[in-house]
Image (cartoon, rainbow, N blue to C red; front, side, top):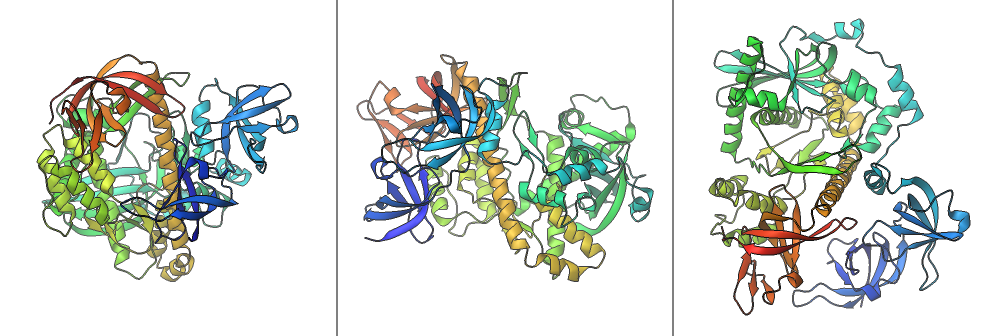
Length: 640
């Protein structure tokens, strides 16, 4: 049988899969005893021992470790006499790392450390490692989040040149620079962000123009300060984006820019790139222009306070002009939202989580974030701006960077059809359009199934990414979409700004020369850094959810069955925390998974558990290191 090369992905239960380099080959199952001392993410050669058949994957054993992908291993150092071991955080690790005395490098017992493997040749022996960095004691505040940042290799230091450059920047733009720009400082302008936000990269102005609206979206002109071939640009490129890890932000740019010179703070002059759009009462963009501009924001507004006004709950504003503008924004948002809905754009409105930490980093409250009208206004305005910018460059022969979201894969759609059929829902027709998914969401929008179906649908979707070639954005039911509106925190947007600014100066040849060969590499890189940031953010969130529930073992909660599998039932609580009920904890019967109908069935009683069913649970056990939360069902609800 043939040999294949690929990357090893080890499951927390000890077995693994090799994902072959050849995309035409299936993933290969590797039993625990056939790993041959390979570690998670190693590149390996595998010999096929059993071909695929009867719906099962091919099986194999690892015969060679081509390269180890273990530059960053993190764990707890435990000292034993003159040597020690590192107990790795990675739940997939099958070995502790032996640390001889000469490789301890100042680590103390129970320190969190980064270790590098230096020898892994002796069979049936632990690999030998060397401690390369001590992060701190495991009880230090924020040490676990720091460990996650290190695990994902998130850069935490700017270069010496970048820091010096950032410190050399002035507090405000020069009069000479301002004189070259369109002056919008007399235009009534506001920013609307979350209460804790510090970097404001978008500001809004709006005016009524007959029956149409003039919408100005001003975006921080980061490209004016972060130029190509500079140290600060290299640092920004390597990071790809800012990463938000609850108690810290790992910014794409130094604070002097992200919170200072590039942040559209109220009452100060700021350089911007402005997109002015004339939009009619049906949401059609009748005309648009781009400007290198200067603004002075009148107000720094907060989502919840704006929402209180527009939802008729409370008005704290004494400025009649401000209130009038906010209502204009609400009107235009509704128009744009209606147009997106008409096209078939998907609005999942899925649950977001707010995690509140105390001074020592412990989670003291976890709840769902309410998505309100002010948030949706800004979202609407950013979407239409990104559409206008992307559409403009799709119509001219200039290399560009697009945000692509392909239609779901056929096998995923088939699985989705089977799942929703359980609830009496169906996708109509064989050709799939965003409108088809939207219609499903409309059918359940007033029921308890909405979040469940939304999450199932979300898992059906492909992952959005960046590409040089224009294509569809399935979720938004649009084409030629770009990311333009967040250059402080996304490198993709900074690139788009540079191309736009070059076009404003008629430097099309320069734009082509600079980006024709670069954009594919940039698109691949920023797509990867985005995925890495999302995984790190999700890992931190899962960690804090596990810590929160660890303090609540024995408590009871109401929940809804969010997924059923061959090994147990996942249940989501109202605070967005998800836990699992293993079959072994269902003591009243022997239960099996009916895969065809997506239901758990008791063999003797016929009792069923199915998607969307309400249940009452008790928190049985929590493993914080593995991010596992175990529930038991104490009473059944009715199927929805």
